[in-house]
Image (cartoon, rainbow, N blue to C red):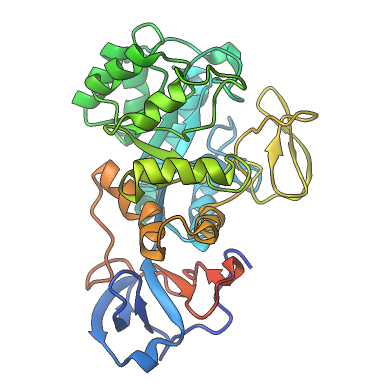
Length: 391
């Protein structure tokens, strides 16, 4: 099952683990104490136990889950601690709680609450390494706007952003915006100068506007292929233009619903594993059973297959999957190898944010992904973190 400890973990003595290094293939024994790796030594291949070991992942875009939302006016620091613990069960060692288009006070409340939660708990502080502001400076057009409320879409305002950054205690690390919105280009320049990573998303920009955004400092396309018009010109459109721009990395939601397999393959083959990032975009309804739920300015529906939609339509409204599901799907597709797939969910997003790399080395967090080497079935891939953290 997703997010559950492996049924036959390769543990020895409670705080030691043997398996093959996900990238080098070397069989190693890892020992840890107090949540940190204290030794790594090579052992014989027969001690691998049929598993591969990789560092925990980093999710740049996660909105909540299990009925909790970072965007809710009732969101509390207890909610934040709960979500941090639950994300770890799905293989995430670090992430960016994501605040979407909303009124000023709702966004300020979410950021201030997250900042308080980080002060209260070293564990929460370790996993919530910063925040992602997705909107409100996006396209107002139907399609590119996605499920973001039109009433709160607006042009960039530096003073407003600085007040949010103050509430976040300086931890807004990523901002997604539409470069065609009035004032967006100088806003991107200011964000980049302040060390904030800028992403293009929920946009209807033309080629010139996209190029201007990249020259101003934009470095990422947020969930490329989603948040778009249903119908586009065949050749001259913002999808092809972002795909072709080697200066932009791309995040994708590989949950099996947001993008067809053919589109995922195209994006990864063009951007390469070095420039493609797996994100979950897990919404507040992720992890809940099928049904209709009040959300934002109306209702959203969780379908029997986990897809979250605007009721009565095929239009997606966030993701019902967590990052382990997206990684499983990528492994199933086999577009890149196992090691590159792991890094698309870990090393690549960390590099974009300027975070230290996670390695299976002494001093690193004792947070691991366990893959069953002997099976090709995606269901056999187990994010196995719970029993190793903080013991």
